Length: 185
Length: 304
Image 1 (cartoon, each protein chain N blue to C red):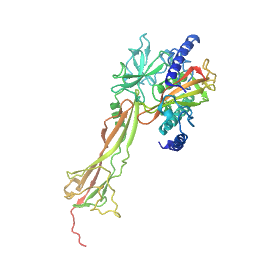
Image 2 (cartoon, one colour):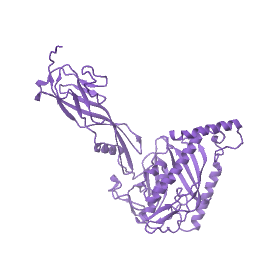
Image 3 (cartoon, each protein chain N blue to C red):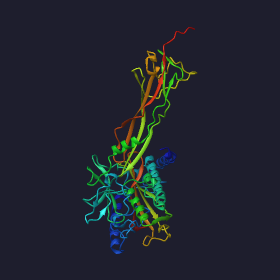
C-alpha cells in the first residue's frame, strides 16, 4: 500500500487539472491507453491509476523473474509465484522444465514495452489487461552445453497479452497471458 | 486500444492464424489453442522431440514424488506407464489421460462448492494447462491429507518447554506470601511449512497459556509468561496484574524431599492452512513438561 502512495498525489492533481480544463472528448494527459468502453476512461480514478501501476509492476516483475528462472533452469524459482497465478504459473514452470530436460536454457535480454489496455475494478475479481510488444530477438533458447541456438527457436517481436488479477488477499497476479505469434508488432 | 469486441475479434483472428500456421509450417504446435506464455516464445519447440525423460513427458519429479501415490501404477489409454504424480502437473487421471493439480492460488472466480484445478493434458512436451472448477476431486487425485500433513509437521516442530523461574528461588518461600511464577522460554509464535504431493501446509504455533501444577494439589493457569520478580522494583506481596503467582497455605516440610514439586506446561493454539483450503480450524498443542521444586516454610513472626 505504502509503495503506491507517492503515486497518488500526481494522480489527484491530474484529476483536478482535468476537471478544471473541463473534460469530455479532450485528451487524457498521462494515460497511455485509455480503455474504451470502461468507466475508468472518462473519470480519472486514483484507484485505477494505482491498479495500473500495480499491474505494470507485476508484469515487469514477472519478466525479470522469468529471465532469472529460465537462465537458472529452475521451474521452482519462488519469484515466479510472486507474480504469477495458475494456470499461467503451471504453464511457465512446465516450459522451463521442458527446456531444462532437453539440456537447454534461455539467455539474453527481453525488450518489453507494455501498456495497460483495460482496467476493470468493478468486476469480481478486479483485472487489468496489459499488452506488450515483446521483443525476444535477443532472448535465445540455447543448449547449455555449447550455447548453440536450439533450431527453430528464433524469437521476434510479437504481441503479448497478460491479465493481471487482484486476489482476495490483495495481491495482483498474472493468471493468464500469451504471446501471439500471429501478431508481429 | 482494443475494445472488448475488437479484442475478441483479434483473438479469433489470432486463433485462425495460429491454426493456419500449424498446418503450414510443419512440426510446430501440437495444440493450436495453447499459446506460449509471454517471453516464452517457441514453448512448443520440443514437441515431438524426445527429451531426456522419453515420451512420458519427462522426469516425474522424483521417484516417490507422490508420497501416497508411489505404489500405484498409472497407465494411459494406449498402455504407456506414466507417473501417477508429477510435481508440476499434479495427479494423473486415467479417465482422461490428464494431470490435475489444485490451483495455486485459487481463482477468485472459483464457484462456491468447487475447487479450482489446473488440468494439463499432453502427451509429450508442453500441453495446455487450463483451469477447471470441480465439485469433487477427479479420479486418481490422491494427495496427502492436509490435516495429517499439518499434524506431522507440528510433531516435528520443537515447541520450547517452559523454563521455570520462581521467586523466591534460592531461599525458601513463606506460607501466605505469593510465589512468583515466570516462564523464561520464548513465547514467540513458531512458524513452519512443508509440502508433499502437491499439498503445501503451513502452521503457526502461538503460545496461549501456561498451566502450573504447584505440588499442593492446586493448579494455576496464566495467559502469559508472567512477570519476572525484581527485588528493586517489586513488592512480593503486591504482584502486578499480569504477574502469575501462587500462595501456599501449608509449609512443604510434609512433602517428599521437603519441597513442593512444580510443573509447567505451555499450551499452544496452532493456526494452520493449506494451499487447497485456506486457513482451517486451529489445532492445539502442548510443550514438554518442565519441572522444578520449591521449599515453603512456616511464616515466622517478624518484628520491626
